[in-house]
Image (tube, rainbow, N blue to C red; front, side, top):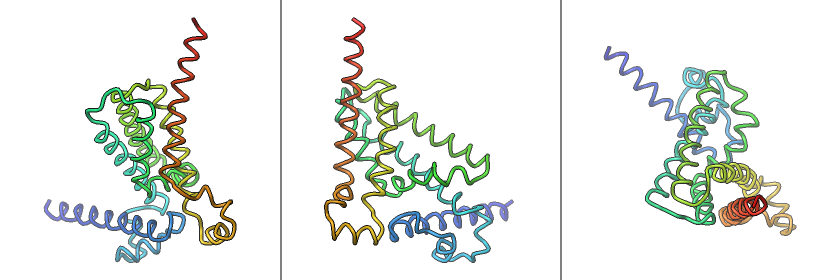
Length: 223
């Protein structure tokens, strides 16, 4: 029994070592697209052949980071909005933008999850990711509606916009060395690569205010 407990503890520790190594490499190398499984195993001190005991593939490892990113975002949003009441749509949008910008790795992973991660793992692993991410999603939208004036449908639309904008803007604001050199030569092309959080905030505030404006217009039309 004690042997099994120690074995489970050692496996958990190795799993965390691999995830920590992947996080560090992604942040140091400018994104998860530059992370390889061999580099992760080397950074964590594991033999390359041993990684399969913990993750079947790089995609499964990165999906685990995305899953935890959802949990972290939900906790952060819940904590930030706890006790708040009657926030304006713009204030709710600013909270969404700020908490997302505080998680650069998660913003990066938002691009890769639908493109290459969740479709390249086993059915059960994909099911677990969907279950946990939607649980976090529900907590986030509930926090928005409880603390502010947006309806649940408006909060869901705001979060949908946030996910799409954050995924795109993060990639644009972290160009490859080739693009960074190109933008230095032609700053007009690189204007979108600047100010990730301020741009995300402005766009999400526009979405939130627009949603409420549309709702008021619809009610007026029905009267």
